[in-house]
Length: 472
Image (cartoon, rainbow, N blue to C red; front, side, top):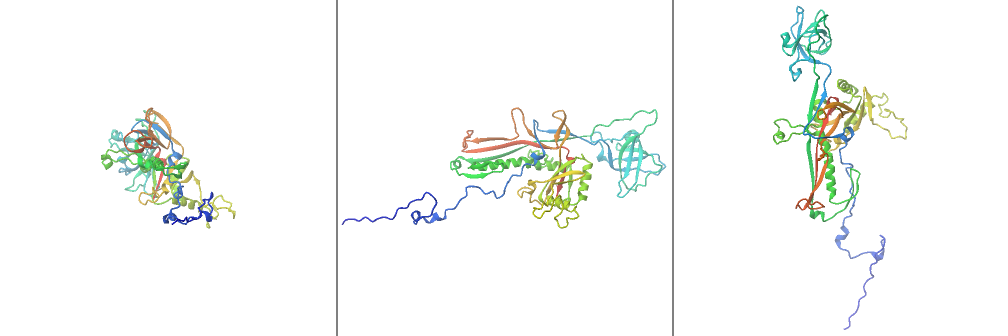
């Protein structure tokens, strides 16, 4: 029996363009094909710019150091003042009265006081609301006058002693001197009151690794990164994020580092730590506790404190969002027409304008400029903290003169700057290198590529008494 040939259907004709035609409609596709996912090859940046570094680049500088220890000296006060001094018995029959300086205020090296015979001093009652004070001349000091090392005798210029409270303490400072005719000069001299400070660098490291097998399966992803780079990356995307993370840690370590205390577990393990910005300002600077300064009276108290320090004309406040809003509200309240929240500031209030309800700064004795600090807002860093919360940092602008013990001379340095280990043959500011046997590395038998990062650095906070740390 002869066979027969059955005519097939019309052959499918693919179209050159994505056009739905009867000739290119597939009817016999596999069930799973219709559920293949649509993929976007470009990453969606749902968190925006994720890096938090940049603070130190704005306010400081970087310079090399070749030692395990960085030392510098900061100037002390030019004049001498003692507080919480106690007064000896005085009934008016005596010609002198003994003043005792607290032991904690003695010169650390000598255990003596910076008071000399012949100096004229001002004594002020420290009792709240008191108006009592005396002026007197120093007639005897320390053991040479039969007194203790922290005592001196004064003779009052007034006929009677002021009516100090029985248990009151007094503040004292020298304002001049007086000598009789034909007498010798001032006995003793005063040495410069320098504060010697030091910090040590810490070594920071990070590593990214990918094995050779994963490197053989290339998957491309189009990215735009925080440092401005864009294009296609494959396995090195994670390496790139490791680098960004390490860059952030170089800054956050300088902000948060603390020195290891003697007897601590870190010390027992051989670590020494380092003094970061928050630690230095908390120990040697000014700290505002108990919420935001939300009234001019609060800033007046801060300004009064700055007056007693270096009196730096310009200051920047790096703060979190809530503190920034609190300052905006405080400044807005100074406008008597601002009850409705629409007329404060240098605005025309045109009906078509977008009303600016924020301020970039203000002047009250000093200039204060405010800027949001992303580190304090980021929820993966300090943004969501309750305990140990920091809401802002006031940083003085400019530089200060210090004695650099390495250079052996006075040098101008920014108030904040980073010192990194470096020499003619080794620069440890920012090191990166590859190891392993994949991805171009040929250093070991490890079937992987490891990208290593290293830096050794410390931050120097000079003139910490001019900084203000806002906590809570």
